[in-house]
Amino acid sequence: MFEITKKELLGPKVWLMDIVAPRVAKRALPGQFLIVRADEEGERIPLTICDDNKEEGKITIVFQCVGAETNRMAELEVGDCFADVVGPLGNPSDLVEVPIEELKKKKILFIAGGVGTAPVYHQLKWLHEHGVDADCIQGARSKDILILEDEMDAVTDNLYFATDDGSYGIHGNVCVALQQLWDEGKRYDHCVVIGPMIMMKFAAQLTKKLGIPTVASMNTIMVDGTGMCGACRLIVGDEVKFACVDGPEFDAWDIDYDQAMQRARLYKTEEGRLLLKEQEKDTHEGGCGNC
Image 1: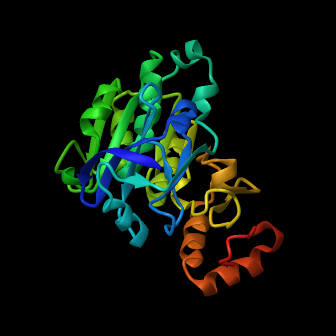
Image 2: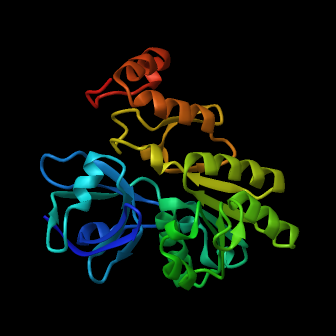
């Protein structure tokens, strides 16, 4: 059993929890994810890792209540236990594989939207601990739904905020903010964008225009987390990939976001899953019992 040692409401229906999971914490790297189950009857929920404390054997998760299972998770309190915490899964960030001295020479930008801020924090903290500076644009519809503001500020060289309603920071979305920084003379060698699919799509279009190589995390479309269900199938360049086993991070310029968003909508219905199975043939995958 995996005990909850901290529970905090970060924003509307957005919760942070620290969980005792020594084996996961010991091996966790930025960019990876885990799978949790609230109890033995619960569904598997894949979540990117927000933080790890290897000394205390704890990991931090952040999740938004969007359905029955995440609402059940939110009912758990400090002292309660998750039935399962499995991980770390997926491939770590490419930045982890780059020599530190080489990273220190790069101008790195992160773009975080919504609960995508949580996995961005994990990467920023890892870079900060290794002496690597990075900037971040954190976007939200309004100031009241920004999360982890103090934590993000502590691990970034420059933290910029963008709100759609202009209630905090730059008035506009993250693309408006990036264009403004670019016009002011800011230049970057590498960008990582994590957040809602539509945000990543337009951020990738802008970074391609500006010539900033970009990576995007497709963790939001994962369901089973093992490659069995086929929910996170997507097209990257001219290849079929699965976010959970091939990612979750991919070259942001090569992702077919429109196909991924359309597919995600279809996958929610039984009729849609049957249609996808027929269309995708051997590349559809299966084994989840839903297709």
